[in-house]
Length: 74
Image (cartoon, rainbow, N blue to C red):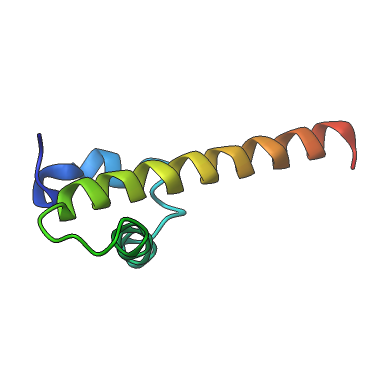
């Protein structure tokens, strides 16, 4: 498993989704995940990766909805 420091390469950080999601947003979401699971220490990497995945999925869904709205004229 990659550590947080190894998680994102420069090319991944330049990708369209990560231009829309800041490190601060990932950090906040990782903290929320940590709190949700009872503030158990030792799983910060898992929390970080889960936060990235959640935010990436949300961002992609938002982009898709905007595309469909644009195409349908809504």
